[in-house]
Image (cartoon, rainbow, N blue to C red; front, side, top):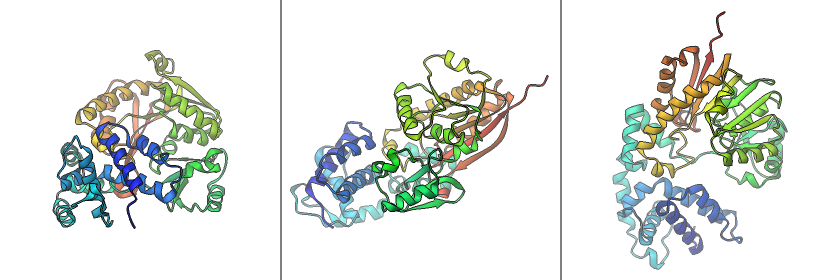
Length: 407
C-alpha cells in the first residue's frame, strides 16, 4: 500500500479546483479520471475516493493541519498528509511531505473527534440548524450517516426488462447485486463499479437512482393512461420512473425552468424507450396556467437545501449558505401554491424534497393547507426518510388529494 506520485498530484490539482476555484466535485473527479489512459481501475478508484474523502472531511483535516482558506498548494499537501496518516499510508520521502508530524496528527484527530462539528466536518451554522430542527440526538445520528459513502442503487427499467433478468446480465459481467426489500424496481451493488460503461446501461435497461428517490413515483400512485405532470423534472430520474410505471400509456408532461436539463432528459428517455413524455420549458406563467385543473397526478419535486443527500454531494457542505436555505423556503411555498393548481378535482399531488429539515418539509405542507388554494386539498399521508434509519438518502414526501367539487 504505497502512494504514487502522479495519482497524488492529480488529487492535489483537483482539490485546488474544488476548494479554491469553486468547481463542483463530481465534474472535477470526472475530468481527473480522464487524465491518464494508462490508469487501471484501482488507480481511478484511488483518485476518485481520495478526492471525495478530503472534500467530505475538509474542516476536520484543515483543523488538524492548521491551515485556513484560501488554501495554497502547501496547505493542500498538509491536508493530504493528514488524510494519508489517518488512512494508515506510509509517508514517502517526497519534498512536499517532509516533516509530516504523524503523532501530532493522530493526537489532534482524537481530540477533535470529541466535538461534533469537527468530527462530522460541517460548518457551525449547519450544526446549529440541524440541532434546532432535529434535536441534539437525532441530528448527531443523521449527520454521521450522511458522512458514509453512498451505495450504488440501480432502478430497473421495466419498459425493457425485469430485475431478475438484469441481475443475471450484470452477474455475467462480474457485477453482483442484491434485491432490496419493499423496493420492486431496485438492485443494490455489492461493490462499487462503473455501471455506466456496460451495454446494459447503454441499452437503457436501468438508471442509477437512490432507493429513497425510487419511492416517490409509487407514492404518487401513477397509473397507465393518466395525465401526469412532473413540475420540476430536472434531468428526469423520477420522470423516467413514472413513465415506466405508466407503461408508456397516457400523457406525462415534464416541466423545468432550464432547457439544458430537459435536453438531458430527452436523451435519457430515448435510451429508456420512454415515449409518452412531453417537454415544456417554464418560460412564463402561461405555461403553468394552461394546465390548471387538468392533471390526474402532479409531482412537485421541490428545490431544496439537499441536506438529505450530503453523502452523495459532500462538497455542498461547503457551498451551501444559510441565506440560501432561507430563500429556498420561500421558493418552496411559492412552487407549492402555484403548481398545485394543476391538479384536477379528485386528483393527487406529491410534494417531495431531498432534505431532512422539517422547515422545508412538514412545515411547508402544514402552511400550504392553511392557504386559500391549500384549503382545496386533503392531507393523505407523508413519509420522512432519514439516512440514519434507512441507510439511503434523506427524503421527504407528502401525498395530498384535491377535494371533489360539490355541485
